[in-house]
Length: 98
Figure 1 (cartoon, rainbow, N blue to C red):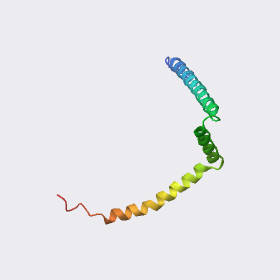
Figure 2: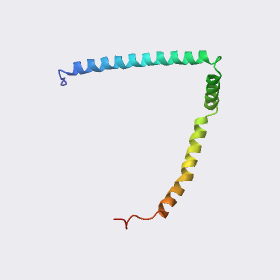
Figure 3: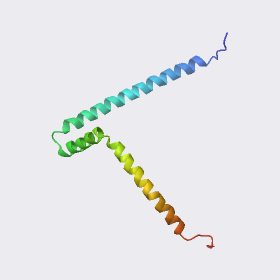
Figure 4: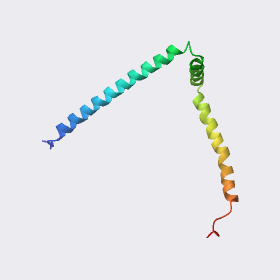
């Protein structure tokens, strides 16, 4: 017979209750997000800036723009890194400062 602590049932019940709270929170958040998205989509035909923004987002998403943005950021980082190291070598040392 395995040892069973008396508080294990209470802890398990508390964990289940917490899990229900999380599921309820997520469900409400999804409902709010869906309502917000529906409101944005409803404004799209009337507001040109909303249409332009969503069109740019969709075009970027369809063409894997995040991949291109990541590649450009990486190349920029690699390009800037050596110049910062060289600038650090040229700066005067602080060894003789009081």
